[in-house]
Image (cartoon, rainbow, N blue to C red; front, side, top):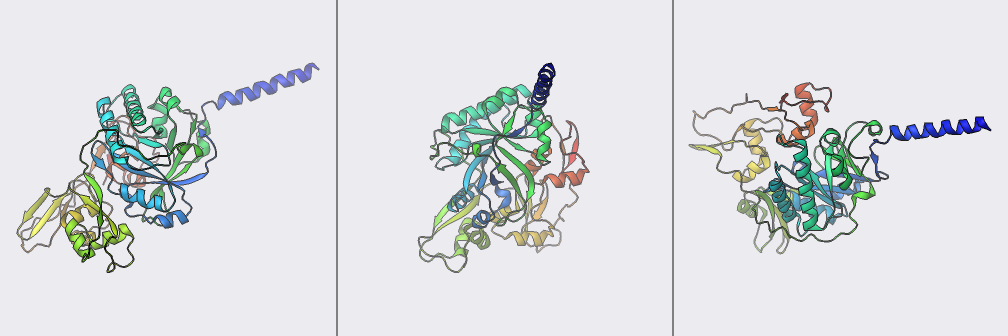
Length: 417
């Protein structure tokens, strides 16, 4: 009898110890049952019919960044994803360094997503902290999320990489807000890692995913059922925000006599972009009453050098070739060929691009020797740095010969291009 009793005690202690050892394990809140992607203007036009047929069920769409940047493809992504039966969610990229800016950005986020009906919980993407201390970071995050919840009456969660989930965001934040984690290694490794959270409801498991209907790479995700809103309704604009946005899209109703080339000239875009964005099968066949989505941009002109018969543009942070091409009413292919650009998705701040052919012999040559470096700050992650400069994590790893993407330190110099 005593031996049985002793054996029972030993088994109890063994099980108890296992539970203690896994108290801090990070596991999904329930089954990871939903295939997803998260997208922004970097993906360009997306064929959501093909995305749906590829098995994707959820798409998170970048809505806004900072206080006045609306993602250029936000409206297009929302409309086409919804039309193809995908369940959608929205995220905001936070750049606030104090609570006042957090409130301002929350107002802007809500103004951008107003009039839309999300299926998934709203998301705060907070990756770069501008030298702000840990306590203030958590206060800023909480301020933003509380204000968004108050304005929308919708739940909001936090997107974070593992490093910040472990060392930056505190347990009080974790108790009130669920986690969508970015982690690209074996998920089983999370069973032995201590973070402020015990569970997550979404995991971004690669930034190099491929999906039919999307050109190039896209973030791939898995979600649990907890990602979905219990109550879905249209978001009202209770923010009172009137800040103009830098990039947006407009809806144009085709009039009798219109042609795509005439519309493209009017809005400073190209026929090909109109065809791609609106999935037009025959560019010679549009009809009165048809609604076209058109991207517009007002942040490009004014940074050019003009000579006799020539224009040279200096690239600014956040620019894309498609934006620059639209602003000057030329095609991306024209700029690529004129400047011998090997990768149209990789341009960098300070780079000089010839926009028009020159008929003079003394045009200054394009300076292709410029290199961009970034000094790591407290709280930075390689994924966050990559997003900021519009390149991939793998490109940073290759440029800098970094073996462990989770191990960088303040003061470290990172080559961007």
